[in-house]
Image 1 (cartoon, rainbow, N blue to C red):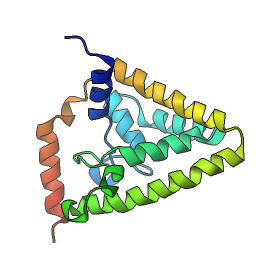
Image 2 (cartoon, rainbow, N blue to C red):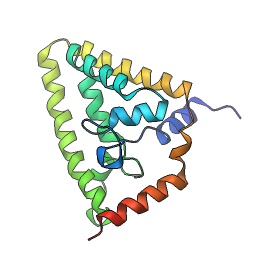
Image 3 (cartoon, rainbow, N blue to C red):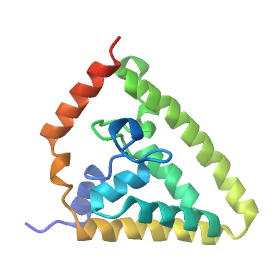
Image 4 (spheres, rainbow, N blue to C red):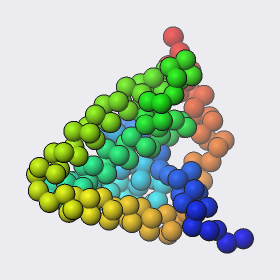
Length: 170
């Protein structure tokens, strides 16, 4: 059965990269976004990092895209992103998700501050153009590799999740 564009976008969203942080064994510098993109689509995380940095310094759109990715990408083994944690009731969040909620508020604040700063810094069309370009790069990376890596299957994620939750219980 052929996928329609709406089911393709839904699948793209459901199989989006997961952030792989340092405490999960990743080589993350900040939030694990580049490591997650690299692991999900089979690219070198350093190359992904360079792309975000270059588009951030040259045009400004990379900073906006990175913050937005961090807000919308859950950690490896988790279902809740920082953005979703903001809108989830406190009694329905685990301790890890509580931390994600705090991170989400900071990221949202950063995005709110960044938008007017980008407009004041120069031509906002360039900034948002770079952001759209990065979205298309994500779309092409997904089209090239729509299936997540084997180690991201549910069995492995459940094991990692249980191991991590035991470590945080006190």
